[in-house]
Amino acid sequence: MSKKKIYRYFFDFLDGQTEWLNEMASQGWRLVKCGQLSYEFESCDPGETEYAVEFVAHKAYSESKKYKDFLDTLGYKTFYKNVNVGIAVGKVKWRPWAEGKGQIVTAPGGYFKELLIVEKQRDGNPFELHTDLTDKLSLYKRVRKSCIWSAGSMFALLIMCLSYAVINLTSGAYLGAGACLFAAALCAAYGAFWAKPLRRISAKIRTWEEESKTNA
Image 1 (spheres, rainbow, N blue to C red):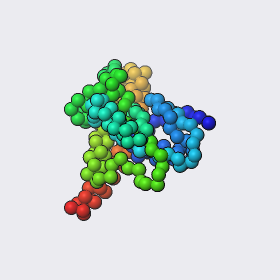
Image 2: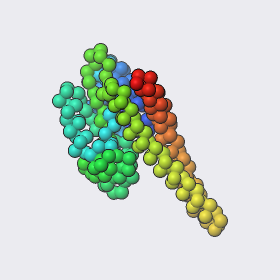
Image 3: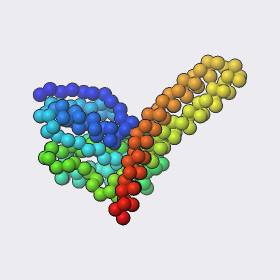
Image 4: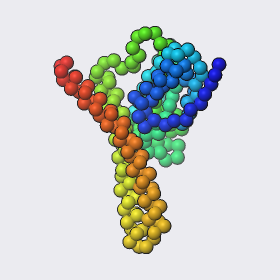
């Protein structure tokens, strides 16, 4: 049995990651382990498995663990996966867009456990964890909030870095200004990376909202 390890990070952590995992499965690779930036696969029959990705970062760890255990009882195989959304200080992370106890997570707990990758054996039936339109809208609106905070925090840091660059330039501290401009460029890049899936998610939400009005 062949094995491979791939290092990737998904800003489009819901749809983009789901599409990639299913593409790997269609090529004959099933997921066996996840790291923070790694995916470990073993060979299987092409199309033997299929995947869905569930967002659980808004939940308290006890709630996401209960949901994971429930999916396991249904015969699915589940993996926790990180997104690193939120504001981290040491081993504590604040998720301002989450619900109740889900706003604060610690290590080991729910730290690095914002997603559930769900695997099932392909049986010819569509694999969707959420089929109800209301549930889909609720899920994607939560994901949109996390992306808005992630992109917004990067652009806020961008403005701060540019401000410090100007201060350094006016005081003749050119080395400091250069460092600030470099940091600003990184913030702009990361903000743009988060903005791309945000546009895709927002488009889906608009489509489903129009559909829900039509069906009302």
